[in-house]
Image (cartoon, rainbow over all chains, first blue to last red; front, top):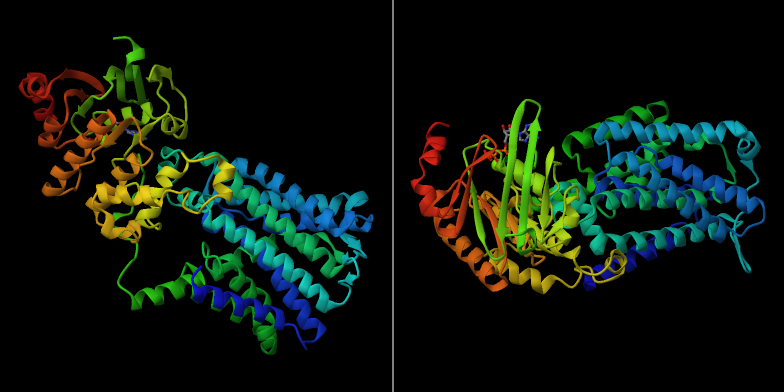
Length: 324
Length: 250
Ligand SMILES: Nc1ncnc2c1ncn2[C@@H]1O[C@H](COP(=O)(O)OP(=O)(O)OP(=O)(O)O)[C@@H](O)[C@H]1O
Ligand SMILES: [Mg+2]
C-alpha cells in the first residue's frame, strides 16, 4: 500500500470509531444496521460484481445465518461458535445454489435464486417447531466476551464494527489474491478463462459460496442486534434491497457496497422530513443514477476521474459477441 | 507413425450443427516441433475443428490424443494444464483488466495449488515473467492499459501472448494474423518461429493470409466443406488443383 492509502485508511477507521459517539441510541442502531448490510452487500458484490453471476437470494442467507445464530445462542452456545456455524452452513448452501449457475445464466439464474429465497422464506414461516413460524424468535441474547458485554448499543456498535472490519479485510484479501483476478476473468470472458486453465465451474461455485458466507455472517450479527427475528425480514424484497446496495454503490468496486448500503440504509433517515414522498424521491434518484451511470456511484466517480486523465474506456466497437 | 510419438493426433472427428455438417471425418497427426497450417474457405469447419479438439464443444464422433493420451470429453482447462494453449478467432481478452493482468491470468492457474493461490502473492510471482512476455510481443508500452482499450491488432497480439504464458508445448492459433499490420506480421512470424525453435513447440495455425501461412508452416492441411481435401508442403498445396478450385468455387 502507498502511504496515501495507509493515511486514508487510518482516517476511515478513525471516523468509524468516532461516528457513534454522543449519538442517540436509535442513530447507533441505524449505524449498526449499515455495518451489517455492508457485510451482506460486500459478499453479494463478490458474486455479482466481481464474478459476474446473478443472485437474488442474499437475504435468504442472512436469514439462515440469523436463525442459526439465534437458535444456538438461545440454547446457550457462545456467539462465536454460532456465527461460525452460520457462516459455514451458508458457505455450503451457497455452493449448492451455485450449481444451477453452471447450467443457466442471466435472468434464468435470477429466477432460480429468487425461487430459492422464496423457499427459505417458506421454510422459516412454516416450520414452526424450529423457527417459531410467523411469530419468529424472541429474546436472542447479545454476545458477551469475558467481562465485555454488548448489551448496550454503543458496545454492540463496536462489536459490529469488528465483524465488519474482519469481513472487509477478508474480502480485500480475496480480491487482491489471484482468486480475485480469476473471479474477474470469469466475469469478463469465461470461455477464455477456461482455456487458460481456470476451472470455471469451481470458481463459479466458490463465488456463490463465499458471497453467501458473508450473508450468513451478516445474519449472525443481525440476530443479536434486533434480538427478535421473523421470516418477513428475510423475504425476497430484502434480497432486492441488498442487490440495490451493490448496484447503487458500484458493482465490482471494493467500497461500492459500503457506500450503497449507506445510501439504502441511511437515506430513508435523511429523507424522513419529506414524509410520504420519501419512496418517490428515492426511486427517482435510483432511476437517474442508473440511467447516467449503470456502474453506480463509484463508476460515476471513475468516469469523472477518467475525464481528467487520458481516455481509457473499453472500446465498444471491438466488443466480442460469441467467442467461438 | 503411431499415436505415441505425435504431440497431437485427431481421429475421425465429425461435428454437425443440425443439417450443417461442419466437420466430417477429419483425421490428422501433428509431430513434435512441427508447424502445421490449417486453411480453407470461410465456413469450412476450421474453428469448429479447433473447438472439438480443445474441449470447447463436444464432437459427435472421434478421438483426440495429446502426447498419446486420450483427451476426448475433457474440459478446456484440463487440456490447458496438459500444456495446450490456444488463441481465438474473435478477440478474446479480459477487456476491463490491464494488459499485465491479462497475461498474469494466463499463467497463474499453472502456479501452486488453489489454496496457495489464495494465500500467496497477489501476482502469483509472475510479474517478471509476464513483463518479459509483453516485451516479447511488443506490448510493454501498454502494460497498464485496460485490454479493452487496445486496438484490434494489439488485442490479437495480447491474445497470442496469453496463449504462450504458461509455456505450452502445443499451441492452436486461430487466425493470429487477422488485423495485424505487415511489419508486425513479420515480427509475429519471427516470434512464433523463435518460440518454436527454443522450446521445440508444436503449432497448428489457422490462417487466411496465404503469404503468412506458406512461409510459417512446414505442412498444410486444406479443409473444404468440413473435409480434408488436400495435405502437403506449401509448394504442393500451392500447385494443387482441388485447393485452387475450393477457393475459387467458394
Ligand atoms: N455454434 C454453432 N452453431 C451452429 N452452426 C455453427 C456453429 N459453429 C459453427 N457453425 C457452422 O459450422 C460451419 C463451420 O464454421 P467454422 O466457424 O468452423 O468455419 P471456419 O472454417 O472457421 O470459417 P472462417 O474461416 O470464416 O472462420 C459454418 O457453416 C458455421 O455456420
Ligand atoms: Mg474460423
